Image (tube, rainbow, N blue to C red; front, side, top):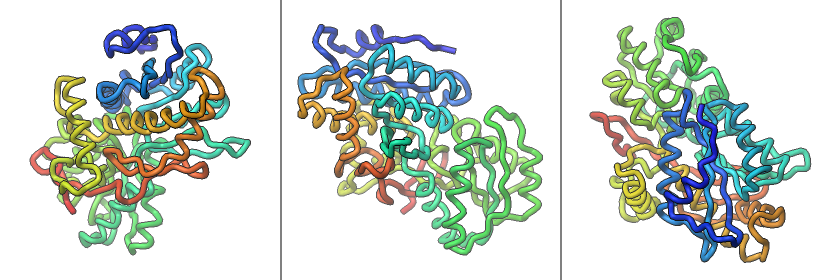
Length: 384
């Protein structure tokens, strides 16, 4: 597992200043190895695009330090502590799985460093009633509500569920319950599998036995293709639905024909070129794509990399306001000022959403942050 600090390399490759004056320092944790790496690599590419887009706050340079957590929550915890205690970062951003991201939050709370989560998690205030972490992705409850509402519109009466046996699987299943009840839909199964499993035959047989009208997928990326493949092998021809966690080229590549036609909720950036020019996401999403192409040498077709980009936008906006307080980067006072600024973000336009945060809530998006898309011939098509 990679676990080395590449600050000097990052600073050189991204053209950061190395002058003696105080710099704003950001600690970025993502999974570039382990089962979460198919998403983690995308977060990494999104961060490269973000720094290409803007690498300073006014005249203040930004120093980025990146670590690999190996998709391991305990490693994410150690890395977060290391970044704060040894590298004195002003902000934490991470990481690629819900479990590892959740593991970072207590460190942010304890050491009083603002954190931007780029995986969808539930965040509670600390014992003092304060919040130090915000969440960029749309909340799972909203992701799933939009999907369940589309199921109802499509005439689905009952559906089977299969998802990961971890925090993400729980978030999707729990998020489906209330909208399903409100829409008059019945959830027939709650089947689970481990991210490292190679077969879900038993779970799929139980699902097929209930004769569902549709299947809701609570997986992600490469491993998210396992249930559709097993369902196709057993002759299932009904509709598939999922969340933005499936907006991944590896999911499409591995799933092949078995995932063709799946409908998922998505941030509008995924279909930016298909949006009307009046849509809030259109311009910034096209700017993001240009920066991504320049930084990575290839186009982007995923949703995950844009979460890193939007996290950077929120950081840049908040850092500008924190600097105006007179607090100096690298100090507890600046961390508090940055935290306060982040939690007072107002109408910040990003690729996924228009962000509005407040001290009482770690989520800052509304239903404008989601559209429905369908996989058609290996490409995501906007489905208004």
